[in-house]
Image 1 (cartoon, helix red, strand yellow):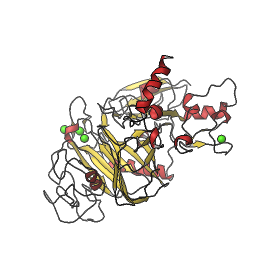
Image 2 (image 1 turned 90 degrees about the vertical axis):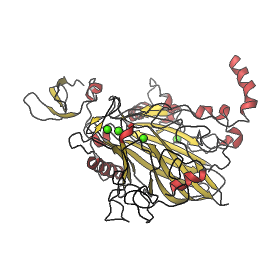
Image 3 (image 1 turned 60 degrees about the vertical axis):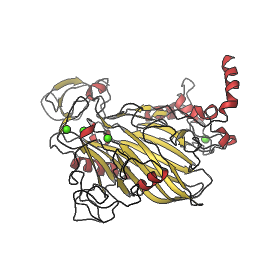
Length: 490
Ligand SMILES: [Ca+2]
Ligand SMILES: [Ca+2]
Ligand SMILES: [Ca+2]
Ligand SMILES: [Ca+2]
């Protein structure tokens, strides 16, 4: 009774207020990465880096990540949605686009959550939904397949497999969530609940997913992001750019460089020297962390300084939109070389789209430009990649797929060649032209095997290199020279 009274008393006030910033996120941790995603924040938890790779190592390669989206409406008005470090007011709120009176915490608060699901749960559901003894997991029962049409929400939200093709999600009749990967995190955000007067009317569906694949280190250390943007507003949008803003901190955060590989649609961070020192560092010969666009062209790659100069932190909507288009805060387009603004080592007056592409920018085929060649000292770095321009008319949607790829060449001292190779593999895997048959070691020992130590090979009792097999003694040989004897019992 007390709860009901409280609710009735609060409702008149809340109904007039905007939605609060989201607070929820969950761990995506099925493979060699352990990270956090949710409507609240991605790859961090408002305080600390939460992109741990390798899982269990307590080393992190990304500090924070979010989406920036900007476009011009049919009345010429600039509209921008963005977030960086979760500062208020921010532009994203949990849940689908609804009639404006419902964009308050009382009506939308239940969307401040994550649907976290394993493929194994779905497989079990498919086999057992007719079994009276089977209890369907909440995440399947309450999968957000449908919005509340009476509140102005779309009827169709989260994807599902519809056994009887009647357009209605019926998990008790065998319907199930249509996810990718071995584990997925799903949530929905909008950019109208903040009551920003220049919102785009966006509803953003995000599925973050991963595959466990012990025998393919590239796939096993990749996190995929499947984003669908819906224009559910009242304005046709043009010249829309979609950007991924990422503050990568590779271990020890003050000795990093960034760069991009144009043909691979890849932005990356690597260590500015061969030692990533300190308690948070990766040590000698550190790894590299990338972000690859899988179904879109990386049209711009921008680095800006952590200050408030014309090449520093964006402040107005116009600054954010400029950066998405490769234009500095003073409306000067990026130029090739040096600081990208006509100064520094190798500066030119030639307009360009990509900072620090090394020699991969097809517009400058004979010239290399890197963070290092510009004369920069390794330091804290952040980067913005974007795709566009595109139209996003009322009712249109755009699917945007990207992935975080990690590579660690602990022998050669430079992990970038391996990162490029891994990125090509992940692109081919996404395109369906490369299969990676995973042979996972499904045992009670799995957490032990996935520890920080890098496994070199598995041999049998007479020293022959073998795949992991069950019920036979095996020797696991690690890079640090240690050997562990195991029997995998199924
Ligand atoms: Ca159905
Ligand atoms: Ca570092
Ligand atoms: Ca260092
Ligand atoms: Ca950084």
